[in-house]
Length: 271
Image 1 (tube, rainbow, N blue to C red):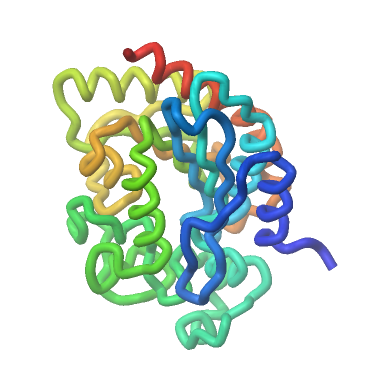
Image 2 (image 1 turned 135 degrees about the horizontal axis):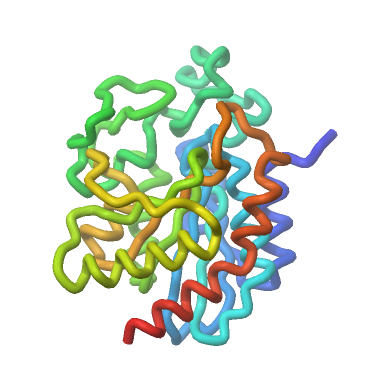
């Protein structure tokens, strides 16, 4: 039997040599794993992936980054699998006894949400409920939840991010080969964030997208609006259609492997 994405993430983080711990638990009680590497007193960056169930193999990009990270100019927290319940549902059909998942077994390969049908990337407290595609009914995608941070996973990630107070965040999704960075910044903050985004996009070979995207409640949005830091969302895999499996990310793993040391150096250049 092949190794589950949960086990692959756990083993990958351990192999990174970093300090491995959980930032919290999912709605079904599964650990949201993290590894920290580098200097804890220097500038920090948070890297996340797999906030959407059907994008669970983006986690492999982050575990490889953790292994490659050196951290001479600061530290990084690697959180490859923000949505462990959704990932297991996508991968194996595991429902954890949740009626929401059991009723939607036929939607497994399109599922983005957590085990309760909340789309975690519209559940953060950043113009919550104001997105163009937001939904008010639980399901596979875009449901905002009953209130901001009602989901265990988004609540844990938001609390952890505020506690760390990172200098920047990078989040991985798929697909499109694009990078999003804007969320109402202006003046010097816009100039700073736009430059950071442009350099990251160029480094990994994706398109930097400018302009208002009518999104709301995302992790990137939360980081920009609430913490005032550069935060980017990278859409991996240039084109195709869901579902994507582990092999589809091979090129993106190589493109992004050494990105985080580079990103920290960029932040140091902004001083």
